[in-house]
Image 1: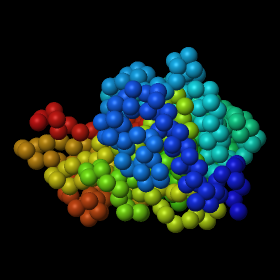
Image 2: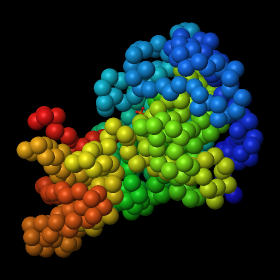
Image 3: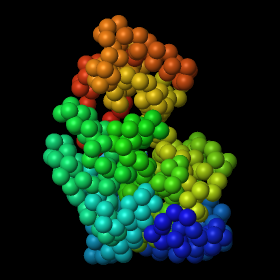
Image 4: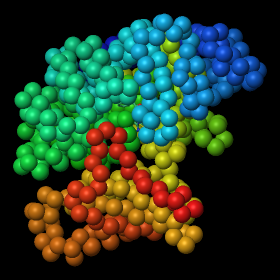
Length: 442
Ligand code: DLL
């Protein structure tokens, strides 16, 4: 069996796990009802009381919470503790609208470190490893979340944060980390920077990478693993629920993220009907925190689309797995009536030899019709090695081929255009993939 940080909790039999969840859920609902006026009003409006909860299924009678509710109670209107008990504040990255703030008690921070320490071990990390953290430090939960989890585990943490790519490379070459944690897009930016200097990222000797905070694909995993010679694991989380550590892939299977079910109760719903989807089907993830003190959330609608994987995992952990996030509901493009997730486009692009792992999706409106263009860059190494000996001719052929593959996959006609190497924006944190110009002309 796999090496585990808390084997007794990670392999808990389902019945025992559900009993633990029920006990914690009761306490959380009671706490929310007694201490947070927002939840009291919502529960009263829905005609439910915490004491109505007899089984986990009864949670379905309780109302959902949305990001807008946090915004409406900005900055800290959903606190369940006295302000003086708040030990730290974090915020969502705010790539969309105003940031939402979240609060932690000392106890919350302690539990979060433990959850992240456990996640790092799940992904192959060990005490004593040099661990390079390129998630941003600050209000964003990525940097500090991984930092304290790694310290709790007894690792040697290098708190580089994002940006200053040249310095990142120097530190990696000199300190030789065994593990790295960061957004997959920024990690590829680092690899590109190294190659441009004639260096091989594999020479650093990184064994495992813990990547998340943005949607990515299996094809991106292959690119990262090939570039650095590491094993890439997906980590999921959101500040409203806690931060990184809500779910993590195990290094044994690298197939689906184990949800820390002793701390977070997961549901998957149809975002239109708000009803649960059948087991194994895609829908919107909804989480209820089971152990948060400062700011518990009840049935928080994440906007993230994924499916649960009901089959047991070969690593021996019993906590349910979820698939990678397909995308966010609000990132889903509707182009001429067809639903498109950027990750579906990424999967085709990154599976194509000759294309660099940088792209941008542009949607415009022309004469009342939506037009989708995918901007790509050629892989410099591929071109240099003779993949594109004739120049523009081959480039055009490659774009035509990719466009036709995308048309097959998406059922939508679109253009693929190659732009000069290095001209697409490079990520130093969460990548922005979509430029939707339709509202400009609307
Ligand atoms: O991104 C927490 C985090 C930090 C997760 C580091 C993993 C690693 P927020 O800034 O609040 O928190 O953004 C949360 O990011 O609702 C998803 O849409 C997206 N997201 C997070 N992890 C993944 C992932 C952090 N592995 C929002 N795959 C979430 C796809 C992800 N999307």
